[in-house]
Length: 112
Length: 111
Image 1 (cartoon, each protein chain N blue to C red):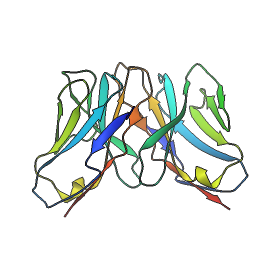
Image 2 (cartoon, chains in turn red, purple):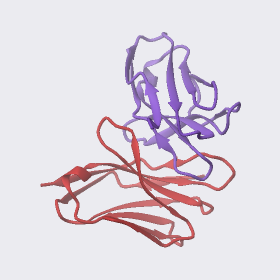
Image 3 (cartoon, each protein chain N blue to C red):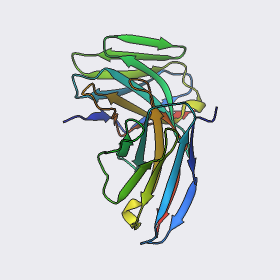
Image 4 (cartoon, one colour):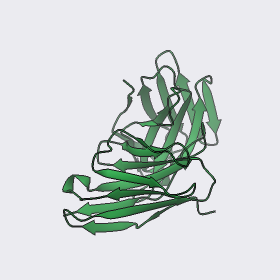
């Protein structure tokens, strides 16, 4: 079945790079997403990538996709305390449904 | 634009009570969704509506009903609330093959 896995916690120092990893199982996925959730708030779309792409960069964010290993990563350069949040990876299968499959989320803590 | 608006933001219920969570979007999206978020479990889909006039069960539909009132509004109803339904509920919407946009959530506690 479809599944998305993420590590639960990541701690980095302010100014360092953060790398949040995600693995997925659906080989037919067309879209892969990264969302950010701050305390008490909803999910905010950060970026997304088509499955025919290997990389996407948007300011401090870099998404890398390894289709062979079904591995997705989000790199945040120059991590700031405001980046502390939960980050969700999600895949959108191309089976004709509209359903997303979300990972359990990675809680990023940035230490000053 | 307001995006996706959920009401109420917080609610406390007693076991057995009923209530309806409201969601409205002003982005002219065809599809709308209800999720619940529980610690360590990510988001789980309760029901979704691919287009106006249709609704389908998601991963965890038991104990819930939905109504797609019109293109803008998609409500979630708990007929007889149970403590296991204590959670944060999120509504989302999108166009096909476009990212989902989320509301700020409804925090529901059932005593």
